[in-house]
Each structure stands twice: as C-alpha cells, then as structure tokens.
Image (cartoon, rainbow, N blue to C red):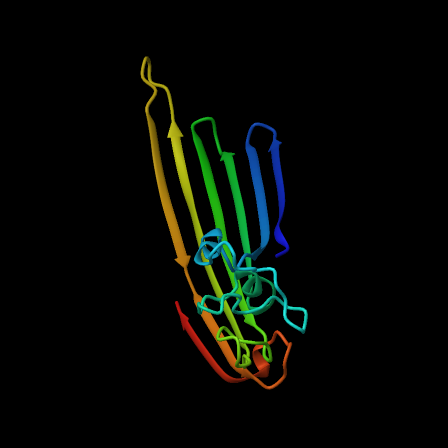
Length: 212
C-alpha cells in the first residue's frame, strides 16, 4: 500500500472599481489518491497465535492458506498479491460575485457557484496467481467505478434603497437558478487474455452499467 497523497490549490481575487463596481472570484481544487488496504486488523484474529503468517512459498509470496485446518486466506497474501484497491477523489469549487451601483438608490448583485465532486475506484486482481483456495489460478478481474456530483447555482437581484424622513425603506427582487447531476458508471472485466495488464480491454468478459 502506497498510502495517501492529497494536493490542494486555492486562489481568491477581489477587485473594486470606484464606488460603482466590485468583483470577487474564488477557486479551489483538491485531488487525493489513496492506495486502500485490502485488509483490516480483524482479519488477523481469524488465526491461532501459533500460525505463521509470514511463511512464504517457493515463488517468494506469502502462503495463501497458512493454517492447514482452516480455509481462511492469509491477509498478508491478499494485501501484497491478490488485491490492489485504488481510490481517487477530486473536488472543484468555483464562486463569483459582482455588485454594481447604478445610482445612489439602485444597485444590482449577482452570485454564481459551481461545485463538482468526483471519485474513481479501481479493484485489480491479476491473472495467473494462486486464488483463495490455495490451488487454482486466478483468471483476472478489473473493476472500475466512477461517480461524480456536479452542481451549479446562482442568484441575480436588484435592490432599491431610499430615505424618507426618518424612514429608510428597502426593496429587493431576486431570481435564483439551480441544477445538479449525478452520473455513475461501473465497468467490470474478467477472464484476462493477457496476465499482469491492468486494463479493461484485456478482459474477455466485460460488463458496463450506468445511472444518471
């Protein structure tokens, strides 16, 4: 497992032109890659204390079934050889606002926001390695799942303010728009024609499902 890597980028810009116009723009992007562990500490409690999980076979890999009296798969073998889980997450935020004063009484304001969150998950089991039964070789499996949420919203409004004696009435009119999509796709390839290749195209059996 290569652990966790995250990168962030942020920028903010504000500008004012005289007393009439003011602008503000902000942007943020984050990207994180996680080589997720295929095991947990609970997996180790399935074995008696005298079972040697560090024992390796002739090919240098951890023994698949270290306990001859149990069908439990060695978690170290699963982590090192059998399963490769990777998760990539991204987040993008954009925001902008503008205020313009036509007169002392009348002003306009507009706001815009964009938000996108996406995730890519991959699970790879190479072909030609010993499977969970400790005897048969794997045929290869590659699963890729993409999921993202994208949203846009904004407001546009006019405000009129004036003073009448001791009173300062204020009238505001505002319009709002909003849109959101959430597409999802899952692709699975099995029975690889080429061993050791992490690609959907090498799978002889492929299936794709999606939702919007």
